[in-house]
Length: 449
Image (cartoon, rainbow, N blue to C red):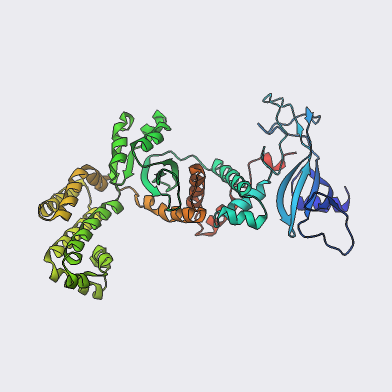
């Protein structure tokens, strides 16, 4: 091996392989003869011809095979990372081996790419990382590739990362609905997302938000996996609760409502009461109540002195709104800090007595909702699961939907959401995990030759 080939081999960085030749080609695939002092024309491609130095391996099981080829194949090219701004193509004529271990006859294992892929692993990693922070179309334009090529490369990189993740048993599950955005043109506008409350990582994504959607997820679980589930946290969407209760294998599961949706339903009641008095009572009252929606929904302890003074002014105009605000604050404290189910039951009965007035339609509707979901609210005080992780996925979800401008493949969305959730860039370790993206595979892939 000459000095030039040795330097190129070291730059290539794959043990057991050597570079035998390197040349430039133009966009039409014609050879560019080197001229001293003249750079190749922009748009040229650097082609690296490589050969195997060690014995080949089976791409199915990784076992060593005979050096003689079972069948010689045509030369192929794989896209690799740029070298000094030049696009690189790795050229090699692989062989089909006959594996003595598994008995198959696959194409030999390649150190730089997965089977049936035309991009190197490190290029797929680069594309996957860039697609995590910008639309796929922008990544395709940046690298001069087609949209479909970048999408397939990103999927391959994310699937390789997902295969390296440990399997965590699902003991506490969270179910929530997600909106697909206004650009979504499919018949369904929502999807159902199931996540592991202990880790916060999503585990399943399905189209729709009805009982059939949750039943599809339950059909993917074995009897042992269902027996391992002890708790499910859902919002107050009735089909989710019905689907869980309809499965006899989940009869032992405790169903709770997360505090966010409990307070959301209470906020809707007091906001409707505010609208009923101020915005339907004439121009003068409308001027007083304008701009107070989020103030009424805000907890008293989080209000400044000026905001508390404004609330007192509103309550002087409508004492019924003040009493409703007091009930909501009592309910907020109960949901947050009730020590056990008994304390929650006592406080819930007090709130039900204060909201049972038929004339107050807004609070009466909330009263009926509390009665219908009483068991799930009491279970919240007994178990206190980390239900906040369900809503914590909203930021990553909305970012993905805005960047992608809609998705057709929900499995693609799930992989991207899993990656962004499992690798938050908050610490040095998190940054290293994010940049790794499963690039370094287990042996013997690194030494495949």
